[in-house]
Image 1 (cartoon, helix red, strand yellow):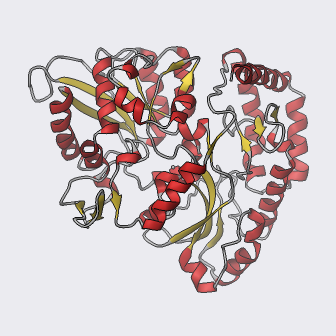
Image 2 (tube, rainbow, N blue to C red; image 1 turned 180 degrees about the vertical axis):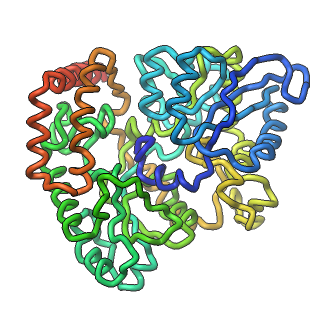
Image 3 (cartoon, rainbow, N blue to C red; image 1 turned 45 degrees about the vertical axis):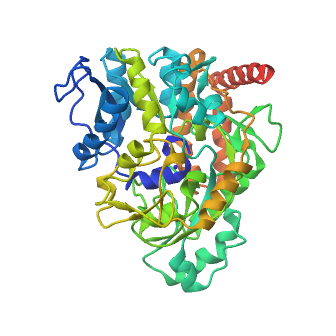
Length: 495
C-alpha cells in the first residue's frame, strides 16, 4: 500500500501485519517434468517471495496447486525470504545465475535488474500465455513498467493510483471532539497535537519515524525520494529540480521542525529504529498511503483492530511508484518461462485461486455471504499468519469484499479510480548506468542530512542551505541532474 518502502506508508505499516515471507532455503529450481508429488506431466514452478511465510503455507499451496494442476499442468513452490534479507539474498541469487522461475521485485530492484537483462522480456508472452492478464490490467501498469519499449513485469493490480493521507486514531478524535473534516495539510494538525500531548501522556501525537518524509503535494521523484531530484507538477513539469528548493516542501519541513520542538514527535526520531505498529494504539495521527484497493479506511481499521479515519493531503496520481509497488518477474535462468507466465496469469485472473491464497481456507478463515455477490464474512480463523497479503500476491479487482467494507467505501474507491490522473512522468524510468559512481557520492551526502532534516530534528532554514551548498560543490550532483534532464527531455519528446 509509496514505493516499496513508503508506498504509501500503508505498505510499511501493513507490512508488519500482512503475513509475508521468510525463507529457510535458497535452493534453486531443478526443473523436471514431475511435480513434488511425482505426477508426470506437471511442471514445478519456483517462486521467491518477500516477507514471512504464513504458518499454514502447505495448506494454502495444496489448495492452489489443485487449481494450477487442472488449469495449467503446474505446481507452485513459494520460498520466502525475510524483509530485511530479501534484497541482498535475491541479489546473490540473481548474480550467481541460480535457476528459478518467478520472484517478487520492488521498484528500484525491478528497474535495475531489468536494465541489466536479468529478467525475461514478457512482451511476447503477454500476447499468448498472458493475454487474459494483459487485458485485465489498467493501462497505466503497462506504461509504468515498460522499460526501453519492453515489458519485464507482471505487476500486481492494486493501488494503481495512490495519495498520501493523514490517518487518525478515531477513538481519540471522538474523545476530544476534534473536527478533522477540514484537515488537508500538516499545519492543520497543531491544535489537536497540543491537546494530545497535554492530556494523553502515553500517546505520541505525531507518529513520525526515521524514514518519514513530508509528502508535499505535486512533487514526484524520478529516481526515488532518497535522492534530491524531483519534478514539480505544480510548477514547470518539464524540469528536474531539487525538491528542497521548492517553497512548498520547505514550508512542510518548517512545520515538522516546529512540531519536533513542541515535543509532538519522538525526540530521537532521526536515530531510533522505533516504529509505530498499527495494532498498538500509542499514536494519534500518522501518515499513510491509500488507493482504491484499500476501500478507504476499512483495511487500516481491520488491521489495527480499532477505527482509523483519514484525510487526504495529496492529489491521487497514477505514477511509476504506484505501478511498480509489487512486481513479479520471470528469471532469465528459468527453463519454464511460458509455464511461469501461465501461473502468474492464473494468479491474477482466477478468483478461486487468488482468494484462497489471500483470505486463506474457506470455512476456517472466511465464509461466503449468501445475500451478496462477491461478499464474504471473516471468521475467527482469519489471522495475518494464515493467509498471504493482498498487495503483493494478485489482482485486487477479483478479490472478495469483506464484511468490513461498506457500500460507501466501495463507491469512494470507484470514484478515486475513475478520477485519478496519469502523471506526466508515468513510464519515465531513469537509467543510472552512466552515473552510478556520482549517485553514490550524492547518497553519501544525503545520508548526513536527510534524517535530521526530514524528522524536524534540525532547523531546515539552516541545514537545507548547508546541504545544498555541499551538493553543489560536488561535480557529481550537476552531472546526475544533467543526465536525468537529458533522459527526461527525450522521454517527453517521444510522448
